[in-house]
Image 1 (cartoon, rainbow, N blue to C red):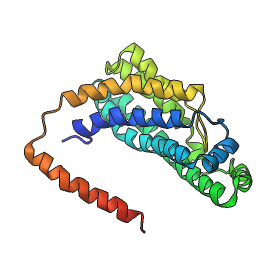
Image 2: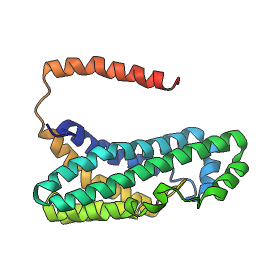
Image 3: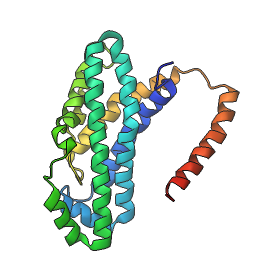
Image 4: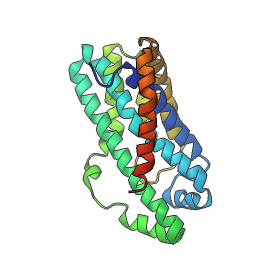
Length: 231
């Protein structure tokens, strides 16, 4: 069995891009730079929480989507598949790291005030860390993946170009939405959502046993998720 399988990979190909697009659009009303992002987090906490949570969740889900694409690329272009998979996955790790910093900054803004949080972020913005040296993967990985998908025949020219548009997405802590953000996430949806639907339609219908097993497993995971917030 390959992991992720068709159900996991196909679902991720649909859900991951949609979550990233949703998060991008939700924070679009606010200025791109971090002082206004912090102010928006205080003045519009529900909307900004939804926006950043959707974007974070999209990046987490995308690991399975990328793995599913890389599996298909690897049939004809194993070398390209390996490099593309590594670069994009490391880039996804970096965006998740940024999301943790974003959350800490939002908490500071809501508890200590926007001005103090802004000074805190500004003072540490250029502080070096592991991902400072790996930032190129966030952008370059998508270009390599798009070329690999095209050369292997996994995506046609138009959808490969749409996938490459993700390499235009701005990187860094507390980045809002600009035109390139929308272009990139829309391109990701154009490139991968149809592939995800295709993959899901190719899967065998789940058995009755599998469906009955999924219900208590889902309930159990939900309970563990609630318990995890209490630690």
